[in-house]
Amino acid sequence: MAEAAANAELLEWPKKDKRRFLHAVYRVGDLDRTIKFYTECFGMKLLRKRDVPEEKYSNAFLGFGPEESHFVVELTYNYGEDSYDIGTGFGHFAIATEDVYKLVETVRAKGGSVSREPGPVKGGTSVIAFVKDPDGYAFEIIQRGQTPEPLCQVMLRVGDLDRSIKFYEKALGMRLLRKIDRPEHKYTLAMMGYADEYETTVLELTYNYGVTEYTKGNAYAQVAISTDDVYKSAEVVNVVTQELGGKISRQPGPIPGINTKITSFLDPDGWKTVLVDHEDFLKELQ
Image (cartoon, rainbow, N blue to C red; front, side):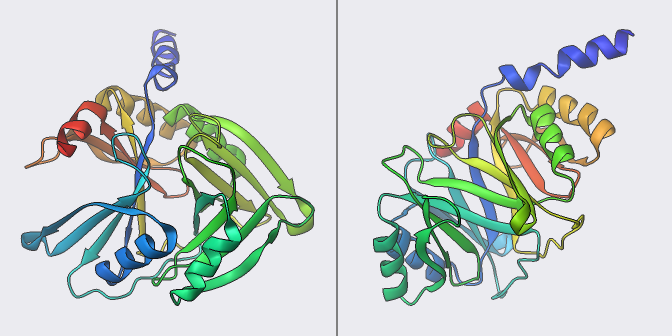
């Protein structure tokens, strides 16, 4: 009884914690080529770049605003690796813009690939398009009025949507913002996040009828989310994984050499999330 009461109290923590999406990490085959594409086609800014020769990799952080307040992409180039397998599980990133047609024409003019021409979604009025970057990552382009966060979605496919919703609510304190079932296209999706999806970045979880497993590939790595207490957050994740699956992949503590405290875990489908100490993250940016 005492343990159940302690766990119930612990599970309240993610709802009180000040959390936001920090960045998505993925691997690319040519860092300069991707930077050029994202800045020229999408209008992102290169925020910082670092080379770590002793570990044989380079990083670049790009987004639509400073990392202190915006969700960004963290691109990783591993020396000598020019291609990666995206797998069948990763879906897409999404960018909101006031003019989908114009952005798609820019992508086309710069030699980018357009996989779905701009136009309304089937049975609706929202205007979208899909394009691919030089490594084959898909980006959904969404027509939207001015927004504080243009880099607005990360879409991942999952094998059991209700389990995933419960996991992200309990382990990460996210809210189910909306759920859409499309039986005619045999899929259901759930938008999960910390605020309205027009204001912030959300996780779009998609369940395709009858498909319970996907390949991960080696291209997409993880999302990072801020927390005020990595140790307490890891305790919560530990309790939730015992109920719903998944596992802690890195115990909470400082990263050697940087001293930023983090913990990381896999959800029931094997998707990785890193929780980063909020204050440490801000210090790292200075």
